[in-house]
Length: 326
Image (tube, rainbow, N blue to C red; front, top):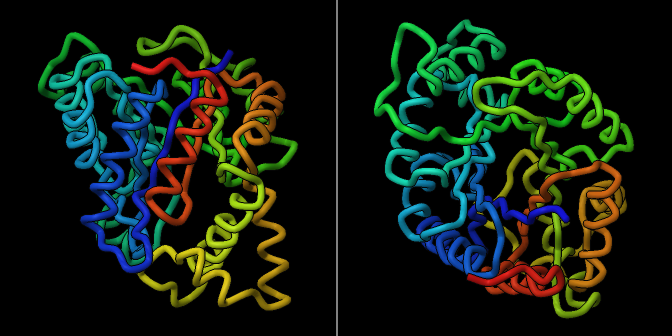
């Protein structure tokens, strides 16, 4: 049986604020812990005004302090934006204060051009080299030591959607988180298989380990889940537009607005990225996909409208899977 995790974006609901969104993320993390989820990760998004999650390591410190046992992680830190040394120091600090509870998920998704320039100052260093540097800093295997020095290390996960990331994770000996929600193609099974077959042990990991990340919309009934999903459909359209509003649209807004014929085509395509339904339906689909990918863990992304809907969704799914409560 695979473990279940949560990845939260800290969505800013229509009529709400960034502060409220972050406090809602805190409550979601507490619920995930009590419901029996293994990990709670937070994302890094820049210039996406409808989500508050821009600095995962900062939010992680708050969440780790607000909980006691669930693993807290980044999903993920976009490494090309930063100094590998500073990332190592940040996560060693987290690990020092919360040993054996910290996950460092890294990725390389590019943001808006001006954001990239503001964050990294046009640094010229390869992602491959940054990962090598990061691993050295986390294992004290280079000349330069990242402090604080800790007895334990954060788990290192490489996030990706294709063969390149899978091969890199295998070559570097990191765990691999496959973003099925971003690219739900059948080829993903081969991507994960390539990672497992090519994996080379490292100082941080002896055997390959795979997380599969999925969008899930869970409600009491299939009809209610479909209503919630319509707001999700609209949010995805918004974030892909030139002028997205600074909030996550409500279910009422989505109902009143509707979709044009062209938008409906995009909605239909985006629906391939989601699992929608009551808890038993979503559970069955998650089990099917997890079996196809031979996943060790599945991460649920409850990026839906309404804090109560997010809380209720992960509660219902935990009950359907029979997770043990703390």
